[in-house]
Image 1: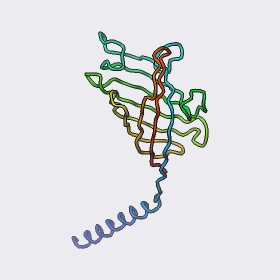
Image 2: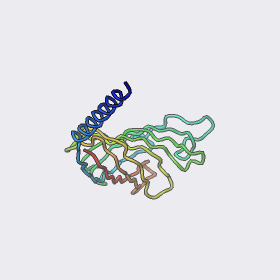
Image 3: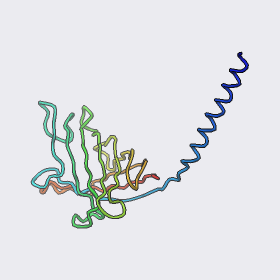
Image 4: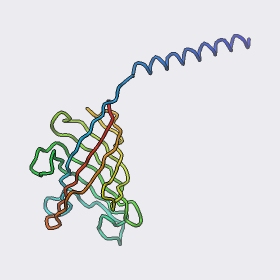
Length: 179
């Protein structure tokens, strides 16, 4: 009885391997690399605020470097640094000051494209924002539409800040691989 069971098990194993091999061939996608520069138009206070305070730890101050402070964001994203240039997306998500010393923020941002060839597509950005770094690197962990299965890196750099109007211009360069 044992030899027949071994033969059946061997045939079954071979069949499983054949199915796995065949299915992997059916999904032989080629990655596309996309590089893009976008500009986040961010107002962190005032009547046009695109960043809004959500919560903080009682007793702590409302500040980007105060542990536990959480913000919602909905920034306009443009094609060029000029805030009146073509609006191509929105940067929507949350920031949480996640280190006790306030040096790091957890960033969860969806770039939601609203025009051009990427209209309706998204890129998902998640990771640690080292606030004192001149250029911050954060992972691209997914995407939809034209950016299905995206993975890559996004760098953020503050180009200018105008404290009198609570405004910052942030350049985002990203490189993503997607199908």
